[in-house]
Image 1: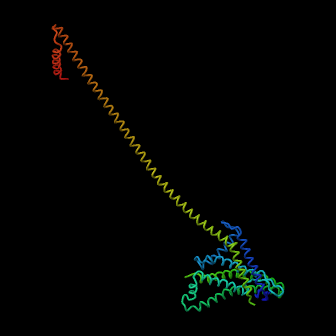
Image 2 (image 1 turned 135 degrees about the horizontal axis):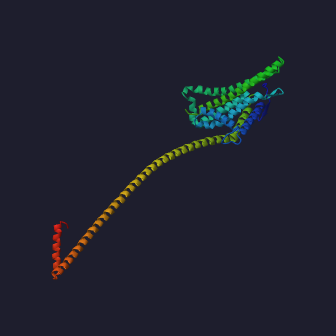
Image 3 (image 1 turned 60 degrees about the horizontal axis):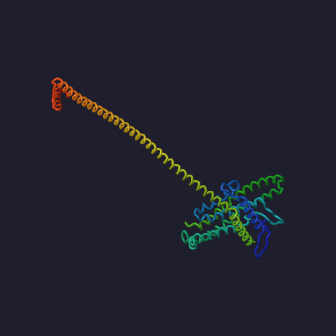
Length: 238
Length: 163
């Protein structure tokens, strides 16, 4: 991961092949995993169906915590896919990073701010859209001057800070984690202390990867939770 | 640097992923979860109903048991009363019959006694007449004699203090 990526220009748009490849792979992985887990669902669940139902209950729990009413039913699928997608996004780069010819070809897509900002944008645009759907355009606009009208500027600023914090938190955590993975790898192969540095680096790398799995899971959880908090602010009428 | 292409790619990929997951995994599994919760609800309702029904049946059975006990007591006491009544009737009938028989017998006896007395009176009259005829050799008018004899015998009876 050296901040040098293969770019392709197509239809006047610039594509970062690293991101696109990783997104394609993680999306495929997510789908295959879920597809495999959901084969032959039964009334008495067993084995893999239990895993899938546990995840569904988990993400439904996140949604219901913020939106206990009937509004929450609309966001179950979004929360589920968002959680699994970000979770797998966070994890893939920990175990597989490909550098070829001085360019990075594979790493976590969420280690790129553009990707996390797109995800945050997606969530916030959806929250605004469903705010209009559930409360009407007038109710949606009223949300900006509540509880008191002079808070209007602060409410508008909040929309931007929500966007920035949601995307940057995820990006920062995953990017930092992967940079450290790379640094430890360089330390292990630096040959500073001969085999000692290799062994120390190996152990450190394992520890850091384990910790990063934890961070990646937590960040996926936080992202989905905050996405639902922001959505509930727009959707639920007090 | 910032690539608009990546944003579009991610949005499209995410949308497609969401559609596919919804169609192939989320849909069937959540449907199954819904069916399961429905089934559990139904089963609970069914069990509750069955329990209430069983309780109602038990209460009904208890009440019927009580009723049948009361009925049995009533039947036995009625039977006792009937038996007592019947016995009384039989005894009364027997008493009545005995009384009838007794009175009949007394009547018969009295009748026979009277008959015997009458016939004895007639015999005595005829005998007396025959004796008198023989003694005085004179045939008396039978009817006059009869009256005379009756008067005489009546006098005898009065002296005896009977009749």
